[in-house]
Image 1 (cartoon, rainbow, N blue to C red):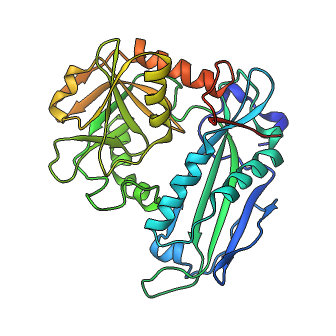
Image 2: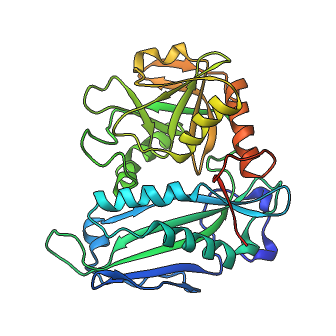
Image 3: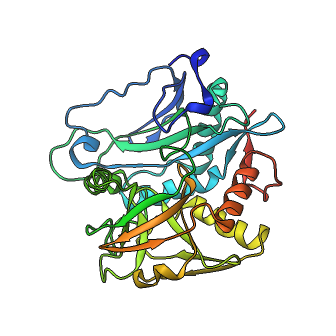
Length: 337
């Protein structure tokens, strides 16, 4: 799609190539200096480690046009740290945090005209990712790697924008104790595709996964963390060692306490107590915070008010900070020149 044909307000969450992407290669124990490329294609050996054994991790973040005409990224330093954590767990060379932030800045700057205008409801999605490129057949870590960042203008993650979602408790497991559920490994998402396809075929928007050890505690969905409101003054955030540490969830927790003066309880949440909550939302970079209207648990329907008072305040405050309408905590926004 050409830029001149872009209808920003009608964008969905899908890939649209922009002009430039950042590329850096790791060889002989070191990363090269990196460069911007106008080629959206990746050339790999048929035996590349990423293709044979899925040695790949990624991040997701956004850049926004603000009310006062700036272009900013949101908490990219936390994405850089999480990518470091993922790389270490995946036996991959760390891409230095300072270089990660520079790559994000260069990618946004080079594609500045693709940043959706303020008030359109859209943003520029950024996808940093790192993968093994060495040709291998035996099972072992790659010796060579590539780090890339591409940009794509996007609209809402869930079709229909902000509407109450219907999700189901899934019989399959997303992650296991002492596994890789706490990092952003690409294979974690591939493993959820079967269940997600089934859920969509049955009319659900997403799957709600529970802990694989006891199947009694709420964890997260295939693509987002989950939070609850218990009345108008309390937010409950499920925690677990197998949940991906969402940057959006971390930001919403801070906003609930420091901006809205709400009580925040971070704890294990049992499946049987879902009906005690009044509101429910899925949160993440892509989803922002999307209201859940119903959770279906094997014939038990748990209803929530949808875009209720607490979810609305959290959404309005977070997006207000991201769009420059509200003052941001120190370090949350980085201006792209």
